[in-house]
Length: 275
Image 1 (cartoon, rainbow, N blue to C red):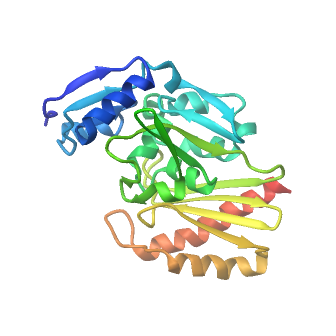
Image 2: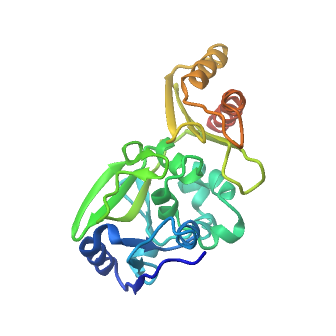
């Protein structure tokens, strides 16, 4: 199939893009990398009246440190962020996770904010945002608002973003010194969406495990003073609390088994990095 007819606007600034989106509302869609949107257009699952291209806006392609976080603009490609030589020191979890996002070809076009906007529950970038207590920065015209990642993702491909808002950037907070991180996922093939993905952080006695691919949004579980003796029981209880379901890719039982196994591996890696 081919897309339904639409107008195309190439914006030279985020001010222009935000203005067009505010005026057009649910008739507008932002295009940056287009890795998910183009397929939806071709299948006519999305029928916007206007495509708003933000990639020519210099502000959209910025990566900066601000307010204790790594701020990533709407047009920053996944490959560009992964190629930064200082990424592992700025955000070790992102550095571990980004190589698992799609394939080199899709990372060369796909954007960080685009993955957040798409809100696939198996995607790695929404998982990282939730695991790190990240923030999504939304803009309506000249007005801005910040939404915590765990409040932004509402369901499968459903977010808090209103139709007349633009995701201007996302913030990934810096972790405290001495924090260990771990990431493990299982998919049918390398580059596919994860069947289950686990991201772990360990800071002192505080342990966190974030899980993607099971519920309709990433799930985050925190423990205080979780001992090695209690870990298996804690992961088992967490696995059974999730809304695992059978589908074409895996059974609910298999997903719960993966939560236990991958959770153990991710926590072990995080503890090793923290020591």
